[in-house]
Length: 366
Image 1: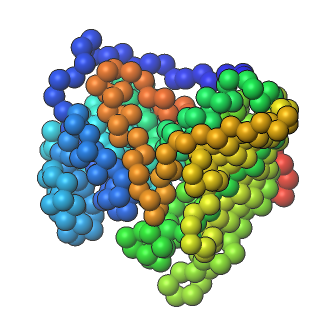
Image 2: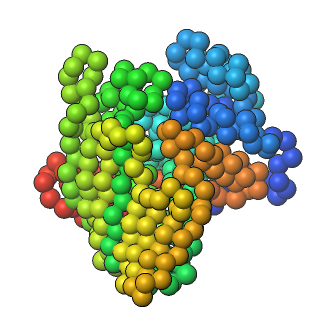
Image 3: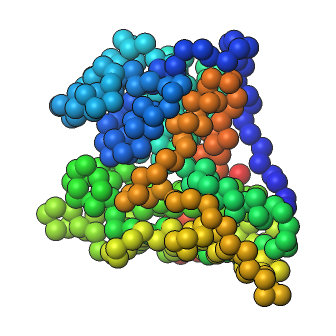
């Protein structure tokens, strides 16, 4: 299987030995993703500690500090200036990702930023440049590729039994952030200036990164439909960002596929599955409750793999993000999902949005 995955230059380590003291994290943003994933996963990691939490909502940072430890701040810049930190987790609205990440990097801190890493290509490039200049690590929290089910799927694909990949279908659908965000329908996810993108920035970015990881190729073209079908603001108006999208893509070697994402999947469970069609059979990923990966070969043979549960809004199993980033910091090893990986996934999604507006398939710029 082809691998074409260049990475940004590796920051130079300041010390050759592994860190001996826990990695001190500061959290910018104490909303749902911090409360349900990053903070508890930091607390559960023996090599990391919650040192500070900043959130502009009065009392929110203090409440979370009471649960997870650390000093509470209402101003993130003050936290960066005053707290003793090694790294920062940026878990704020999309529009703030770039400026907050760059500010933290300039202060000599490693940064784990939520996806999408930025809202424009220019912002993402600036973040990558800031990490390189600061000689600090930048990781993007696209956790899908870290999940055991997807690690196993890639392993099976690389084994070669299925042969060449011909096509794929992948979907990620749930009832929307109004169902799990701490602010409900008043969430920043539904505010254009803060979110910029809707379901594409929330779920589409995950799938763009995941399929690049599984296929081992870059996408070259993307088209499709991006729309708002049902989500409403508290006053009854349609939300100003997308809540559904169906994207069609093509890779360097000619693999074609689709990404189907939705915030209006009102069933009782999340749909997060992938089917990969190959010359010797089919692989189904994340569709069966017992077997995370199922391979069905043309000759009738079937392989079933128990991989463990996939993280979801209703089932918050460990994502591995904090564990991976902490290990990178402590062992002086570049993150697998670094700034360049985040940029490539963002580039796919931004091009998809542009293609939908123009009503045509577009070549993804390099």
